[in-house]
Image (cartoon, rainbow, N blue to C red; front, side, top):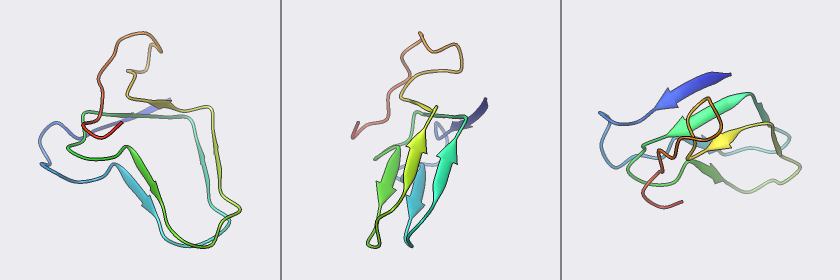
Length: 67
């Protein structure tokens, strides 16, 4: 599990996927000032096995502002 921590980046999204057919797995996306993940146009994205707003332990809440 890889932790993306947005505590010091301000009002940004954690990940923004702008094209089709992306896969995000094994991420903990926490404490961003906006959304944890933003999906753009295109579709066919796979978001699986991630903790969005949870720390890598899967229990500790570290929410993103817009989640």
